[in-house]
Image (tube, rainbow, N blue to C red; front, side):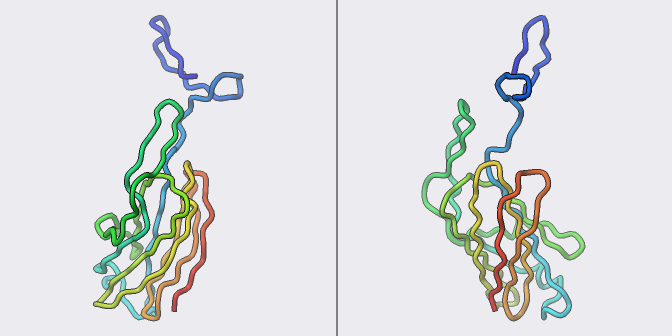
Length: 166
């Protein structure tokens, strides 16, 4: 579907509307976005949340990508206690962590936040389908985490969960 020639060197990425092979760009990985917040009634300040340590367990980081059919597949063992603290950027007291991962089935992720020596955990269960983005809003509170789903506009949205751990 992506065509060009010596006489017409501009590459054209066709879609299926004109009967040709669809050669448009498509996301083949999956995206996980975590939005980490707190509020004044939660028992922590935004600075305490920003200085916390955050980990995810249950993700496969290795994988393969087939360039002929555009399939990405996770392989290998799951990683436990993957520290994602350095991947979080803060703006207006909201920490955002955007991760591009291999699609994988049966993933059950444990999110952990350690703030002021106390660790709080919650579970995320995204389907991690290819071409899908999963977004979770995580509110850090002294009594536990509140994890709920959000939306992403740029990718096909995946389902989310609302989880309260008290």
